[in-house]
Image (spheres, rainbow, N blue to C red):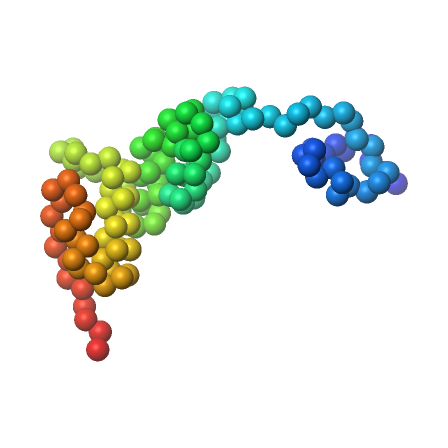
Length: 136
């Protein structure tokens, strides 16, 4: 028995994947990201779980770029990926995005590639003291 009350949304490019006898209403052209409400775009940004995805999201339009600069999003990424404290000292001059970059640079460029010379390229006068155990 069919349930005619159930409706699904299918992108026009994928209509061919539906069974042949599926009734399809005339669909509007797909919406552009710029046509979505700002609160919906903000909700999407809050569910992004990686810096790479957040940077990609920021490149969609100027609205998503502004939303991707939100300190709370970068704070969540720092705390999740690098286990940083939830708050910064009051005298801190770094943004959460800069802290994420610093952590990523140290972990990726220095520790993972075993390139201590990359510490010189961190920037903004950062001083790091790292002791890395040597494995035999």
